[in-house]
Image (tube, rainbow, N blue to C red; front, side):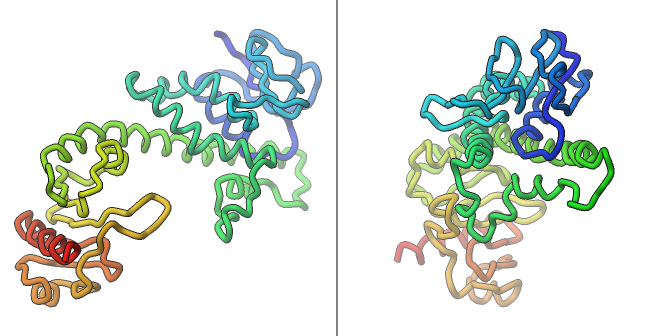
Length: 306
């Protein structure tokens, strides 16, 4: 496909066409990104992709708007924004361009759609209220990207376009970071599953390094595991496991007597030589050696199970 122009609307911008532009400019880096409402530019052609404008959704004609009535819907009848449409049609190619292994691409495409794309779609269509984020609503990605728009009294004729182009690399950083993290979690999966199998019935999971482990725990239904240990630099860490990603509550806390202690005070409280630090919130502790951290883990397990 030879694409010479990526066409979206001029004027103010929203997260959906900005994030769509992240995907398309990665796939078609030589194409000119044009922001316009000129009808000539909004006429489909083989060398254009038109999105978030144009009044039609026709993948064969390479036009991806969602403002018409009725707008395009997912299989579960939730609405698409232009970002969802672009991701549905070009997301897999984008993952390939990002170097995502072929065997992981479909699962990552689905996860990114559910966790990142769908919320943008819902907010843009008014199908989700910003208030669901509570006091953090101003810190959601659409709000942060929206804050990059020009201020009301910027009278420059290119203010909107300049702001859009300045916001584009920021939006790109968020998308690429999410894809890298999902890819890393996929890489970690087999390592963590092997460690879970090796742990057997033990409530202590030992990993070769710090890595994402939550999805593997869920997949293995390893609800008996209470703590994770792994090396970090020259030290070893002992961490609790959150009940879910939606809470700070843990399956088990580290001993209350360790909270906020360091070095000699922690060694005395724990009885473990080499104990170095325990966070006051009791979700992580540090020791100087593997032997010391495993002793601390065993003590934490005994107290949690008592």
